Image (cartoon, rainbow, N blue to C red; front, side, top):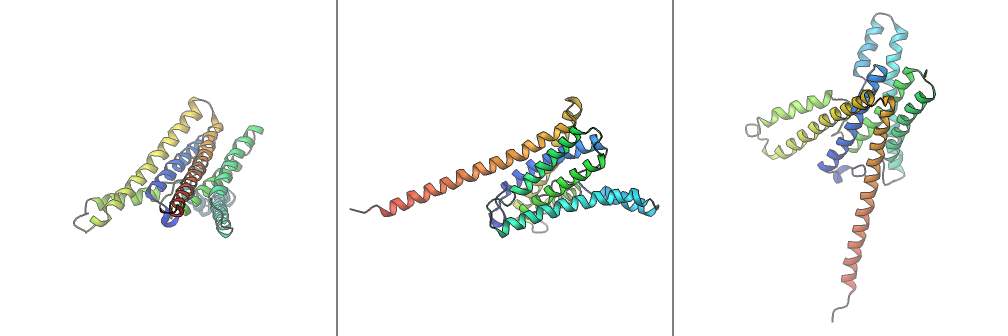
Length: 257
């Protein structure tokens, strides 16, 4: 799920990571909105507010929205830098560090607001946007830009294009691409569904269960479980391949009588 990339990456790998990370993004989106009253998974709205405040000469107010955008950018940069550094050192799991860093940032959001009830909401917003920049960057990188989980605008655009292509499979000679188009639609619908489910679960936990920011512990747990599952599966498949190679080698070395 986290390890495969390039030609080794399958539709199933993309679907698995899309389900996990879109659920997490949906949770962060709702928790951020309920706790802060701000969007914390994308920067499109913040850019609009920044331009508006600049246009009416409220420069200091507009600067806050600029900081939001920069924090998302820094998260994306940090993720990309960690991945490139892992590529340089030829590490097995290039996405381990960005995922762990996202968990640490989400954990700090909970801890700092727990320690101080007056912890600035602006700082919390900065941290959540940084975490989502991290996530959006590494999921884009790992899936070759096929999966994006922190915002849905581009997703619905692509989904609309692909749904329209279904009606013209024969007329426009899309038969050869039919499987690819349907797999892509399935993937995008899964992202939308699990983003919604993550948000719904976060809203229930935040309001009905009274967990407030502690709802983010579920997001951290999901990310860590994904890493653990990926590592466990990798170890299992590695041992299986070694056992298979050993058996094949043993058969070749047995003398014929």
